[in-house]
Image 1 (cartoon, rainbow, N blue to C red):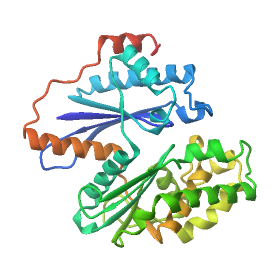
Image 2: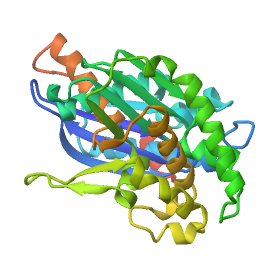
Image 3: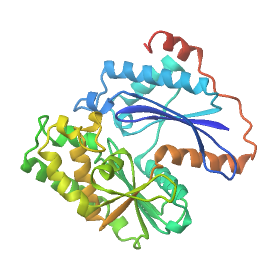
Length: 335
């Protein structure tokens, strides 16, 4: 079966296509993404404005066409916290469906944590033992721990890098020390209260991070480890990360974007991401993290694969086809 996962995030719409076979990991076929920057456009009342909705509809339309062109059998569209937490969420989802024929779903932060944990287990295998997972998104942070395929405990907190940047840091850079200290206090308080049960769990054998934020921080401050012919595995220690918080604070967005691993589109939010990562490692008593390249999208694929294996080993389904509405909208620029 060829499956597509359509991920509507805070900054991009990302379509990942993979072939699924019984007893094998997903085999990547294609990946396509388009920037939408929903978090930047959302106002303080949580409303996604009209212009951003039009951009989102266009991106979903183009994704549907790409899925159809790659002969996807099954499309799984979902939205993360940028849409899930919007006050006009239902209207946005209705408009996407009216324009494209695709009904986008959403899941809770805890369910995101569960599926991301499943991806980490799938990548690391059973030799990783009990795992502690940290994941920083645009709107929320997910933590999970456990020794099975699914976590024994999962937590989601509204501490995403985009959200904190918009609500807790000034628009201008460099950022003053007192603003950095205030954000650190806020994050430490929220994590301290929200992770009490997690901290009471047995000590993990493997401490793992996923997400673009951690990947960029690992490239900036971490150390790649030889992969024995495989892609290098990046690690990130709290000791390596701590000095970079102050270094990022005194730089402008343009200066940050010139640093290793920091993209121009994420330069503004990288300071908040670094603060959350550093404080989370402190609160959870983590000295070093391994960066896992699989995350939520891969977790969804693995979850779908397990359901198919339990139902029918041959995966015979009707191919997904972009609806006439989606094709018409594509020809009109997604409007």
